[in-house]
Length: 268
Image 1 (cartoon, rainbow, N blue to C red):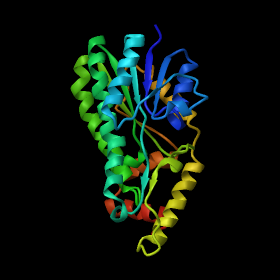
Image 2 (image 1 turned 135 degrees about the vertical axis):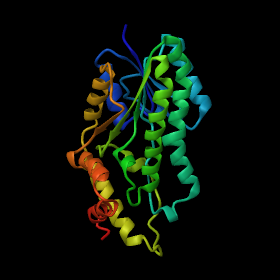
Image 3 (image 1 turned 120 degrees about the vertical axis):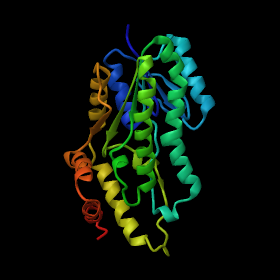
Image 4 (image 1 turned 90 degrees about the horizontal axis):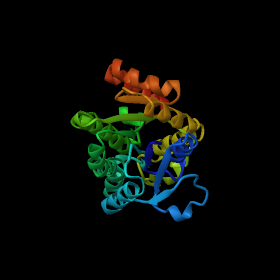
């Protein structure tokens, strides 16, 4: 029987690529979108859902179970970007980023766990970010949300292992998606002491996304993980230098690593 796949944030970018790739391999794929009626070209069904709305999460999970009787794999992909000097980032935007990138995915997991326990098995794959392995200038809140999610899953996978449920994290680097257009940017204020440094860093970040890798690479990695009997806790997918940066963070003295980041973002 074909596995039933549930992908959050599947109307564009990485989520859409994963959904299309798995659909072509005869998986039963359901994706979510806050506005599925606007998506005219989806190659798999999209259910209306917002990870910040627990009622919509419950309804989406119930709809899939009522149609297919099970959920085999959840891919927690929905997320939001946020940039800006932390001093100048509005509190409500910080809370929204944590809601979408941390609390929302946790609530998705909570909603599917009873069904997976009933099945005696299940697989939850969480899309985090290489940015979650380090505090990046003008992306500190984003880094914090993804770091918190990584650590939460490390704990949660141990709690749910007894039920036959597997969890793993997949951290992508920069991919050529529309995330830059959808993320919250703290405005570059004319009288801001951060104006020059922030605007330069913002331009560099957008260039990284525009020159990022094809999302199909993430789709292929996810496909491989689904078919791995004993998956790793963490996977990293990105350009070699992005993956190496995690290793350098681990082995270099803190200030040496900080200096590398400062030079990379032309802040020194």
